[in-house]
Image (cartoon, rainbow, N blue to C red; front, side, top):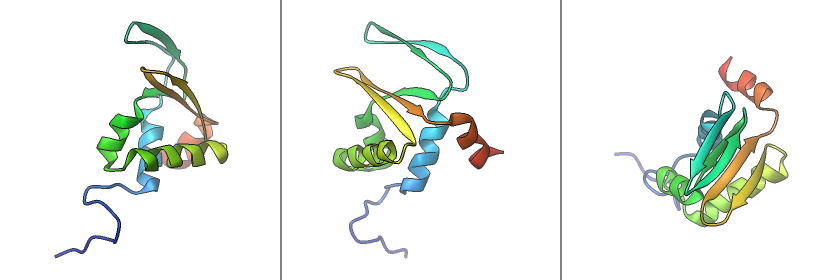
Length: 104
């Protein structure tokens, strides 16, 4: 039987896995994207998400999601552009180098 760490939810993923997840979500090519009748041009290294969806997938409370994204932003790893009622566009800063670090 494996023990669950104190305060950790059963299906919760780690922050390092979450970071890799975000890198994998980023577009590899520019694309036009439409959500709720809003059109976006997502560029290489960007992706659209709803943080509430990520919270469910990762087993994290929404507050932890907010802190995680804020920390990445402070560290200069991402930028965020919020569209009320629609979602957020995230850009991975220096995407090509980040891809090289993890996937090459």
